[in-house]
Image 1: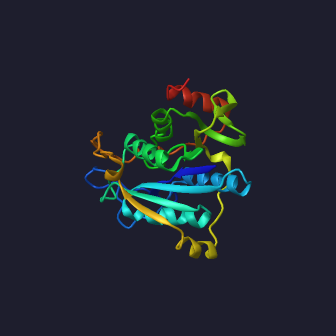
Image 2: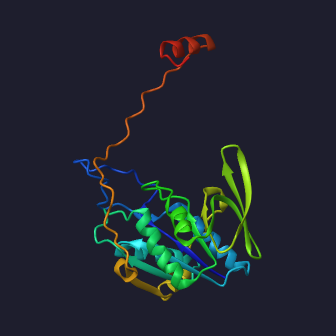
Image 3: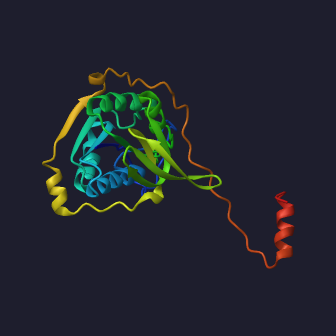
Length: 252
């Protein structure tokens, strides 16, 4: 079985995001970029499936700017076998919308014929949480979202997922699209020897036009603002005082 894993280049989660002075978007100048954390978990899971003998090949895909090569090399250093980079934008500030990404991924899935697509449940830059579901709909495949446990059992995948009422376990028919949550695993660090080996692993470059997909944005960002600063808290000396303060604030 072949596993396909889409990965996205985003601002590193440790970096404090700055909004541009004109409010047109987020400032990416001289900002550290890295792999989307949820995608890192999906890469790790795909590698674990291969190590367990349940997958033969792990292919990683990134859709965006040319600099996404670095993200793919990280995935290759973790243990993926080969990579596909689809250059769909020249400007690092242009975010490819989920539907366009899903259409490109569908074309890649048609070519590669994987038995499983493992996606991060969302990207931490736009929080869309839509690409995996859209790909499933376009392919006509089953889907399992927010996976915290994944087991392959023959022609089915058994997935435990978090829902409002607790945990839910479902069985889906393969091929399938699974989006993963933070609790699924702890991604490995790429060792120096593997980082060196990753430079020799195949990385194919394509364009959105190669797949016949128009990535022109359908959404327009009107304004980007930083969240309001939280008001300072206060200390109270007793439960009675706490209740009194809450009443004054209209909270009770």
